[in-house]
Image (cartoon, rainbow, N blue to C red):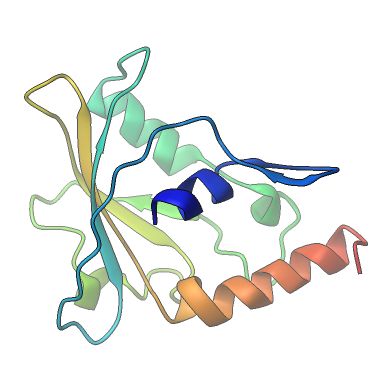
Length: 144
């Protein structure tokens, strides 16, 4: 998870993927849920955004698949929930046909960091859907 995060936040250059220059520390555990990955995130920023700023940026963010209106792309790739008990895998893993992530419990931590919980479908977005969306993007960008 630590390496993959720097990879998918990196850039694609002539030599391949250039890893993002960020620090990531993670622990992964298996839990008994039928579908969905859930992560508790603690993030430090050079310029410390408020939870409200972070919620707005996350909710408004759109990537290349949204700009190209690809068939498998969710309209909103990140949904921000304000309820104190969300996200939950059974309630949120299917957001936008399972292709969006749901963020909630966004707050300032005791050390000034931001904390949040994110949930997404591990089977739809995490495996099958990501491959389909990637293929759509490669075709749209005339890479294949």
